[in-house]
Image (cartoon, rainbow, N blue to C red; front, side, top):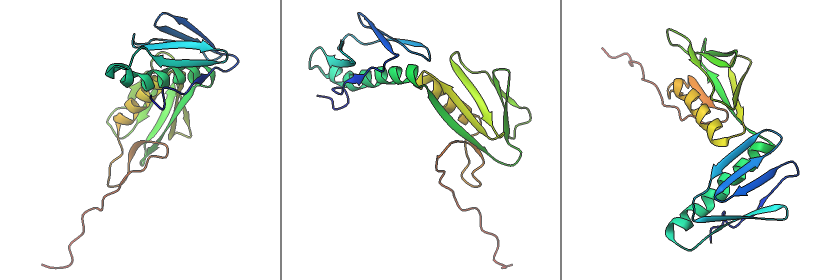
Amino acid sequence: MSRIGKRPISIPNKVTITLDGQKVAVKGPKGELSRVIPAEIVMGIEGETLLVTRRDESRVARQLHGLCRTLVANMVEGVSQGFQRRLEIIGTGYRAQVQGRNLILNVGYSKPVEMPPPEGITMAVEGNTNVIVSGIDKELVGNTAARIRAVRPPEVYKGKGIRYSGEVIRRKAGKTGKTGKK
């Protein structure tokens, strides 16, 4: 049995879960999410918990068990609390700003990079160098943050670029100068 898959998902007070065949709809104070679960997985609500089980012991069912439980747990957490990802911009003259809904990045290119957020994602900037991506869909928040980071990934010599908050960049030693030999 999957260690992750067999853990029950507790349903918070303000969250309602609707099961319609293989479709799971989760509604909460922050919004609403839905997802279609594969046929090998069975879901059932017992009191204040949601249980995820598998129909049989096939290899595919065992592979999907923990994944589907985690996806539904992330949906429940997203509609009740939401997710956010923080990015830091490091480099002289590098900065970010929000114009309307779009994020404008000045990171050393000849023109600023304009990034419109996908539906359901909000972007905020603190102090010109900290970008906060937030939303209710964990997958969409992570993908949006990764797209922002990909505009100027951190380089290994000076550490300039866009990185996740708390990300450790392994630095390389630069070239050594001449030692005075001619």
